Image (cartoon, rainbow, N blue to C red; front, side, top):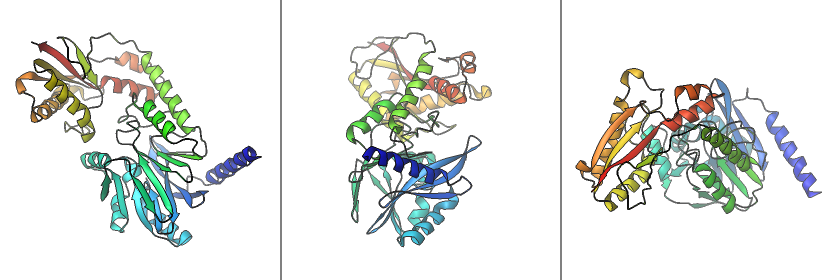
Length: 388
């Protein structure tokens, strides 16, 4: 009987949500108790896409999780909350640095709503000119507002380097944001800042920490299916299978923890990020850069080439100049951290050494597959030149 009631509730919740059309700029759906999903819409890839946020009514005001994607709906959301609950929003937390989460932070701050992100999110938002919060937390943090308690959790990189989830322990509600994909999703969506290798492990960290959630709220589309995490893992598996189908030439590699390396060995990373069409390092790159610093300090005789490689989408008229500037930015960072300049050589290869050729990429069936292959070509390679 309990299982039947659960199924009926899910059907009713789903019907209530989908009865509201995308012609409404703001849709609000009651989830459970004092929890509500608000959904706004924005153009993405020439289609109208939805974005879910959450608000919770407490004795001491309303908590917003993320802000509307549609910038015209910042005030209407507050107005709707005031009209329905006779309460004002007092706190807003954004779950990562993309505009479908952070766009309203500055507006809400001006309304005397306390706005929060992780310090990592703030660093990325600052570098990418996204809206920023007034307050920041540096580790997993518990909040208590009125009768409500909840906690933030950083599971590791996935959709972005800074994505967090939010857990409401009493109600067993897991708010995943864009880190978790809806069961309606047919692909991983925007992946240019994703860590596809770390994402599965990060998802499993969430599954192990927050057992038997009653609700899982993804950042987009349907939020009524508890299989969302497993579905996201399936999408990642499908993506990685497609990439592994491409034949890669074997290369001699080393790890940053190695203390016995030889000339010709390579270390490859895709976790060093730059501002778009520029060579300024993003803060999310600093952990791997600092690991390289540690490696070079432990291997004091090693001389390395820092090579930056692009995909084939860059302007053919300026081939390797942007990657040369980016390579030099990395070298400058290492020098600033105490590595001698005569141990470092910067080299921008542009698109001269593609791992996946354009012919292979053009055989992919979808744009998502093509982008994943282009992303494979975008990399930084640390090559050992000598160790003597």
